[in-house]
Image (cartoon, rainbow, N blue to C red):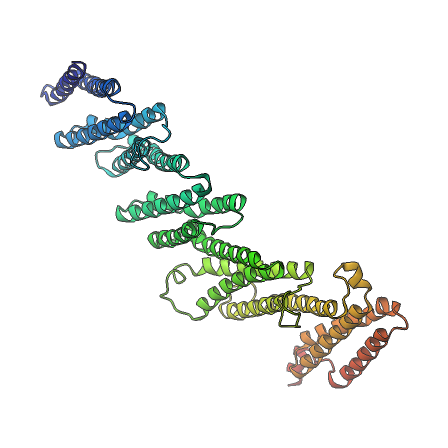
Amino acid sequence: GNLMGGVIIALTSLYSAHMLLQDDRGREWQKFASVALLIWGIGWWFGSGFAEISDRATAGNELMIAILYFGSSFAAMHYAANRLQWLALWQITLGFLPLAGGAGLIAYGWTDDLGIPVLNGNLLGGAMIAWMSLYSARKLRTDERADDALKPISIVLFIWGLLFWFGAGSAEIFDRVSSSNQLHGLLLFGSLSLAAIAYAGKRFQWIAYKRVSLALLPALMIGALAYLLEHDHFFKGLGALGWLTAIAAHVFILYVYEGEKNRAESIAHGLGAMFFVGLLAFELGWQVDRVVTNDVWPFTAGLLVLAVGAFGLLFEKANRRRDRWPFSKQPDAYFVATLLMVLAYVTLVTIVCINDPGDPAPLPYIPILNPFDVMSIVAVALMWFGMRFEAEHERWGLEKDSRAPQFFLAGVAFLLSTIAVVRIVHHTTGVAWYPSALMNSVSVQSTLSIYWAILGLSGMVLGTRRARRIVWMAGAGLMIAVVLKLFVIDLGNTGTVARIISFLGVGVMLLVVGYFSPVPPKQSDTVTAG
């Protein structure tokens, strides 16, 4: 009796509301009365229905029945509004019911372990509210019946729907999945959901969907921090599946988003490349660290992955193909990403080489053929290749004849090679890898004097033969630095064989320089003489 009475009142009110609108007399009070009766009828419909469900249904299926009742009512009211061309009913159905239904679901609360996983009132209720909200948001945004006053409501519904979808899915994962696998579940759920949203945005031509899907990358960055805090690395257990799925979802979202040509898309391309290369580099280093007890090999493995990523992007640009996606669509984004990866690699290699002597145990130390020397050579090669290629395209933002990139490359090569020479002395003589010990070591200082003198001599000879005055000046400056070092530092090691050898060696090199490598003339002098 309760339900039937409520249904009769609801249907009578709705019928009366519609008939008032159809009356040809069209008085003003009829419009207000029609809206009042419409709201009155909807209230009776849902009020009597939910009261009956609460009274009759069991605790286990109460929420599921309520969800089915609310969802079918929404569909029926939407159909009736379209069929009868009833604008007020259409506006209330789309603009109000999803918000009211979501509020009611929140008020009802989450019931732990309700029903079976996934197919239960908790998750299905949240999914239903999410679908209603997103559908209503789109209709209120694009339908010709929607006026400007409904546009803000469509934004609220869009956000409301996303919150319910991700909130219900996350709550289900925390409720059903063990604590050790919750991060994996969240990663899979979030990646697949945003990929589906991107597809829906492309399918229905709604830019808001596609823009929301770009939130995957910042979400993955936060997720990566959570993985490091909880699991120490990324590919633990189902993490491998989760992160591979995330990479695939990111690529799919970029493909779907293609053509927008805005800053967000460019950032997603470039930052995504850096993030995933860094993630794989960290993971490989962590896996190697489990096998060996030496820190040298994990550092080397991780940094070489970073170098491979940078080389790959540079070679992709060097092949000059214009049709290969995604590089052809966002060349500037990948160019910036490459520069940052090269800079990060060189910086990390320099820091590691300075702070660690590079003992390759269990393998013996061999000059050049050891992890740190290989990384240093790769760093110089990476910089040289990048500068050589980009100089052709004038992408450095410098003047065409600027020597700044060459100076930077020479400085890095000089620093890394000097560290490599000191490392050789450390491994062959046993001098401790501490700044004070290295500074006071006769072997280190003498070896550096000879090595720097060789570099200076080579620079001056090369500058003379190629008429490169700047190269000759750099070599001469290095020779002056060597002479000053001999008198300031090496002279303190009086009476040692190493000191005598270093002085004699540098003296002979100075004689050779004076004979074979006079200073080249300035460019202006050469032109005038010609």
